[in-house]
Length: 112
Image 1 (cartoon, rainbow, N blue to C red):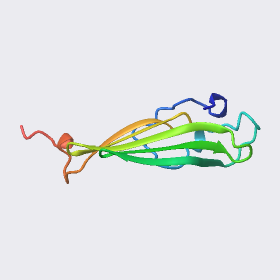
Image 2 (image 1 turned 180 degrees about the vertical axis):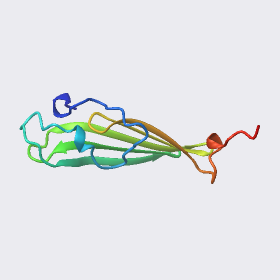
Image 3 (image 1 turned 180 degrees about the horizontal axis):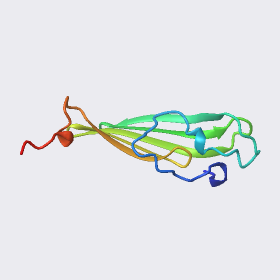
């Protein structure tokens, strides 16, 4: 992974978790070839272990194939919630939790 290719390492992304793609606003240029071109996705793997889905891949410079960052995305269902996480030097870090129920109990207003 290369800190010279990004504006900010592991920027805080709130609840925006990317399963694929790249956060190009954080990409400066390749530290190896100094070109700012397309960022390719390479070595993508998807592993489903005990109800947990883990997607990993490398962000790679199109010109010189320098590895810019390694991306990890996870998805799990815990109790009545879908849990998402993302950790990547280019795309940032984020977490999200969404209820699988029609009405999220965390969003319910108290009656009294």
